[in-house]
Image 1: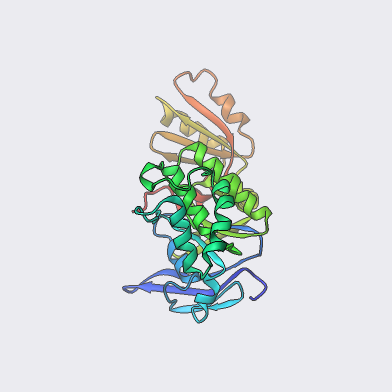
Image 2 (image 1 turned 45 degrees about the horizontal axis):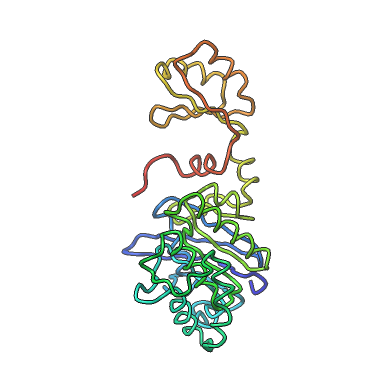
Length: 304
């Protein structure tokens, strides 16, 4: 376990008799971007808190950067950065002051922190904003500042809980580019996300959690190849039920979500041919993606 950046064996956690983490095993190699995916309540955030030693496990072993957790969690966290699900920046401080104060928690000298601030702000796209008050920053700027703050101690490993939630496409793509730069620098990333595109773009490997258990593990491309057919046809419009009867004879798997039929097949040519003359029906043909895997394994029902 010591060779891995993060290694977990048999991890379990119960609340009020309900098991929210149910025997999780995972191993994250140094320098990779590793994803934790799952519906709401699947156990992702609890797993992160257990790995950081913020809560105690009922069972299992955790080694974080070679340190046993929770026994030496404090020593491990000194080399870890965290981007929480919700920004917890101090609204009374400027951009620079948020970085300085946070750096002090790691025992960094003021001069050392001050020397790092320009490169951190440049990395976060906040150059020239050192003296700005938080109230003047957009949501995207605050999220990027939270990322910069997580890097103030030059961590070996970075935990990120839904790092781009609530961001517009421009801000999201900027953060994706910055995260790629971190892995190129040799840092290890562990992230949870509800954006399947984000996981598909960034993650070397990932696991999908459901009800506290790992239901799939591997690279995004491998999971797509194993769990879903290669092509998808999304069809909706008046008369969809009648056409759906025909579709089920042409595709190995057809699922309905609301008024849309999702037809999965290795070759959707016959399905497209069957739509000729069906002018009331609208369709989208696309390759299968990680979201299709996620929905097949965890279902289409809402999780609250």
